[in-house]
Image (tube, rainbow, N blue to C red; front, side):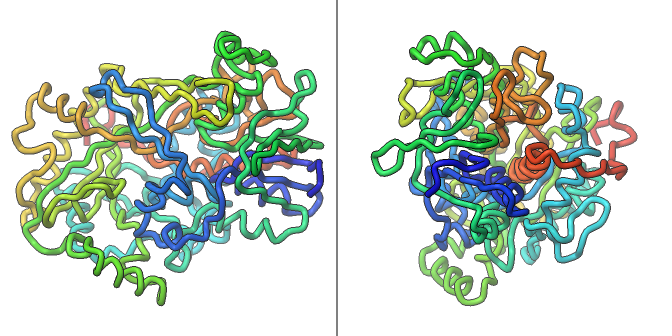
Length: 552
């Protein structure tokens, strides 16, 4: 292997895979990708319905945990992060949600110039391939396949119909002009198998002679010469190696690993670095700060008809599903089972949705670890814009030690208000006539959970992460103290170094984070190469006429 490359990318996750492809496409640049995990060839990664298995397997998951959360009964919260080619796109729920246009308008207001909706929509389109072809909002010939599930289970349509009966709009495309409302959910699936960032971008790139991928390699430190990043020191097989970057070092390790590596390399809050005896290269107090996430609870209802996935949860049935999938790439194994969804505003005066729903035709934990005994279904209810903020700090100067993760969930009173609204509004949807043939007893929170105090107790005990951490290397104006990267994703105060992953988000988006992270990789590649940016879109986007005065 060469001892120098034009670009060194740390992390083969959602953004890192995009970068490996785009930076090497013209054959002019040599690219090295360093990844701590290994191959993504497992059938459990590739089969969409098996998503809970890699999410709970140490081979594919860093298996991070938070520190005890003071507002959630001191619980340590599971924070899975992908480990291996494709990163979190190889272990996630395969849900494709771009976010609301207003999310990106907010980014621009927060100092991320050139990242408004008009600027990012062309990059979402460039990434995407749909059988239906492209239009003003959707991409037709990109590397990343997205599609709808088949909607064969009657509960999916009942969910949409019930929401309409409750007075909410039905939208034809949550990733198009109108996110607000209820409709079908997109998934990242190609020919019945997971379409991760590795499949979409990295595998084609690895066929090029100018791309090198090293797996099972732990990045230990960014090699600095003064205030310039010139390479990476990594450990593989018990031995440390050093490789140089002729042009740039790019961190794509995600919202936990990227700030950790910056701090290990002397870039971060000065007091934190001194505490661990690390020489200060750049005092950036925002490194590791601004940690955000989505929380969700499972609103579970017993089903009066035997139409749920419950009969398929025994090992024999799972074996048959797996066999069918292996032979045909069809059947229940070929979907993530998140086929309908919703986005609503929790109260009047909110301009765009602040609650997301995933509907699921089974009463089970997202991680697959526990299940209701009998037929049931659930809505995953997730407030979108928590005002709570956490941080990532170092446990020690040893790169092998996991960092300290403090989400500080539910530390802001407004978060409790939104959670209570989520319980009550969801209960109303399930009470509509469309669900009358299906709805039995309310399993969780339970019909007895009515008052604010009762709902709060349920939340403290049962709320889970939506697995969407972000924001720990936030993008902003170079003069802003807490900004870590500028609008071209360059680390402020350091030459030759960028961060390109979900950690650069100034604020969390409305929905799952895989799609916007891939978009960040697409747009980041043009910034790195110095290419003219794609022409802004003039596609309009929806806002409810009555948003100031009505909840729906």
